[in-house]
Length: 189
Image (tube, rainbow, N blue to C red):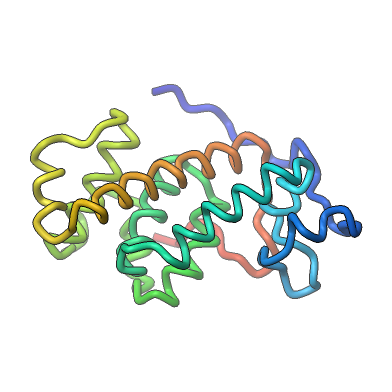
């Protein structure tokens, strides 16, 4: 697969001072310390209808889904790494830490899965992400390993989470969305 250089500046500047017309679309989005919407939401604010639906779907996956939050973050971080999305990886480094991933585990997600002593369940999820990002399909063997500990509904959700964050990573990369203040980039290895 070809590698394309990521933009070093925003292709569409985020809305930093949204007017009342955007209040409904931005309701419930995260803001930075200065009260300005996070750059992802400020960028999406140029399309309020899309922002509202994006927030509803993404919010469900983050806050009401069936996956264990630590596992969800492991999936999001691995997908962010596979997609070379520093913004995605940075935001979910913070969230993943809150959900129980260690700094060592987060750093290990940026390299070959075999270099860290992952549990069998974690390794199966990492392999699922790698296969989905590489081939747009999960092999029978990896599917079976994840399905050992996940219900059918969770299997559907884990693939949807990985796919949603591939979409988000592609959006962030394409539009050059910059890290928000205080959000880490790639870990030091």
